[in-house]
Length: 183
Image 1 (cartoon, helix red, strand yellow):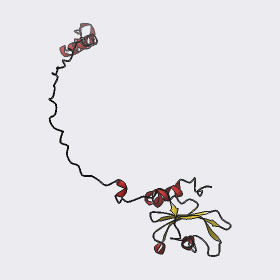
Image 2 (cartoon, one colour):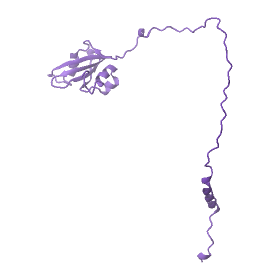
Image 3 (cartoon, one colour):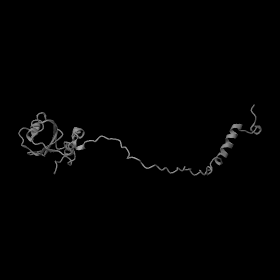
Image 4 (cartoon, helix red, strand yellow):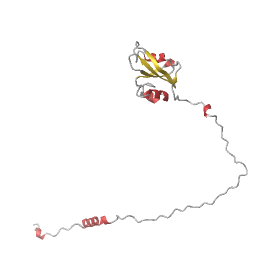
């Protein structure tokens, strides 16, 4: 038979539990102080004695370096910073011929307003199309093998952004939301 509650021995926590409770009670008061201040010694700078050199007995010998020609005399690849008039190579009619039948109907009246302007084998042309908005065209290649890159009111295509010379890219992309230069 189980002992009655009046005669039961009092509950005692195991020793390990009593130690843990004691450590938890004491721990907030230990290890929280700031570390002691330490003074570091001042750095020691070694002194160096003054060195005097004897006067030179002959002029110093300098290494011989090859003389380079001026940079303007050196051939270098150029990237056109400004597009220039193509001087008929290609002609405006040749650029318009690229657009007829594909982009433009054959019976519409078209004339070049600006260009073709050339830079590094690329061309930029602004065309007036009767009854329509001005049209921009970007082409590339030699006049006999001209290829249309893009045409429309906004010719800042991925190919123009990635491959076109800076002068053509500026005309096609930086002239203000598809507007021709000077508009």
